[in-house]
Image (cartoon, rainbow, N blue to C red; front, side, top):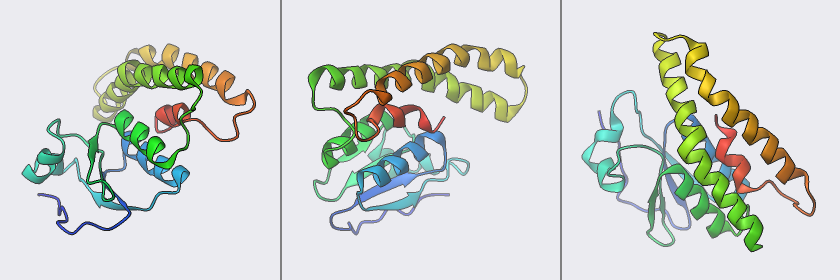
Length: 173
């Protein structure tokens, strides 16, 4: 197994190292929302591509997604960092007003530390099918309900003309 990491860099493009998981989908949705050109390189996590030396050089944590910005040469790993980077690059989906900006960032951190972790664990256990689903998904119910309630309050209020980055943080789950 292994991934074919290109030594040729496309100009003006984001290179996305991706597998179709909730974390991977968040990045493709964000790229589309931001209108950024991108090229996808599959990272088959079932085959262990994320452990290949070439990939580990990009992300020592051995998880996808990873992006390489061919404009700047910057490599970014971890979904939340990638979403913030893409929003900054495109000048979209992160509020510029300080209160709304920090409210968005705190929800991103909450999603990464609480909701995403528990939801990911629930999906992994569900895939194995060896544990009571009610017990596994119980910790997700409160964070999910809280998230939906809060995101709806934030997103409906004018003058927001486009979805904020915080909505994409949970969308894949």
